[in-house]
Image (cartoon, rainbow, N blue to C red; front, side):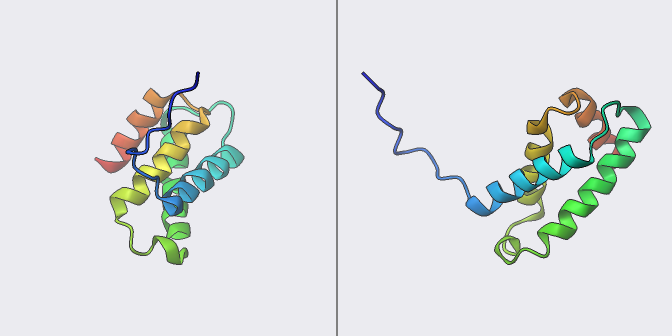
Length: 97
């Protein structure tokens, strides 16, 4: 027996999903094995700037809020599992504070 699919589940926004995948792949391609501390903060800040510049060139993302794009970018970075999520959260907090 298999479970019936949940037809009430929200359909993910494909444009934001593509941004998440782009973020994951791009972050992995630019990630060093031993990032931490200040180096991680600088790398993350540069990457976030690059991600938003990329997002603004995508016509399908022009109607998305900054928060939606940021969530997709961070989900991509966290999903990459290149740096422990606690370190990423700390670095992001320092950047945005």
